[in-house]
Figure 1 (cartoon, rainbow, N blue to C red):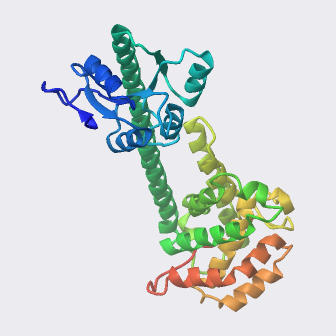
Figure 2: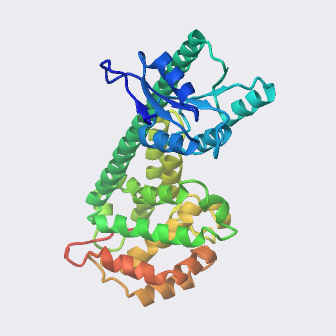
Length: 382
């Protein structure tokens, strides 16, 4: 018998396809005769052929004989259910066996129903129709779920893009007032990621840095470290010479101004987010020092958030290495020596060790995102 039977009647494209599997031609003819006026019929006389047809055509339902040579129905059903391409096709066993153990085994393998021979035509048609309707409903829900998942992913991506643009716009606003270039932002956020990647396995830092998306959040939050400079008067922020003691006290308020502005945004949002929490830590505490002599709170040691400890070294490195209107940039070796001298005074010693281990990457980042083409470049004050 041909491996595919098609009724001479015209079939609309939306007709369901039923694959009938039986090694007995008479049984194939009987089952085909019962269903050919309603469904598109394909037949297979062996388990191997059934699997080939199922993989090639993905039928809507399979009527599967249990007792066949070479591969029995159980083996065929198991192969179908272990294949992602065919596992959702409903399988109805056809068998002369009335053993409840055989029926239980078939259902455990993933079959949806069990019809005993000799078959009753009305029961066969009813059960085939019922399981095709159930499959259609399951397919609809699966497709709907996939669509919703894709839509959620698209919206998350869109929100993420808006967030990234907003961060850059806010950071650029602070830089514009401070006569800085966008390369300071690029460099410092890359320095922070280098330090975080290195310290990710360190026992002191792993509980924080190995949390989901933390390093990426650090990278994206870093540009907001000086957002508070927007609130510093021009005569202080843009002063080319050394600040007086009083002027420096005003300059120091940019850390609290940045923290307060982000906290207000968080209150408007109505709930905390990892990104805003990290941004607050960095903006508020990146001028704190390990020995407690920093500002604005005079935090010391492990009381300083890890995010701010990483940003502190990144910011100092870039400020010292970069050219300002009133000074030349220092060499990498001089900056490195200064950072080493700041161990356990300005910086966490383990963060210094991370810098020393990755100093070639710092120099590479500084060179790649260079300000040398911009003669007016000026990095902001602390």
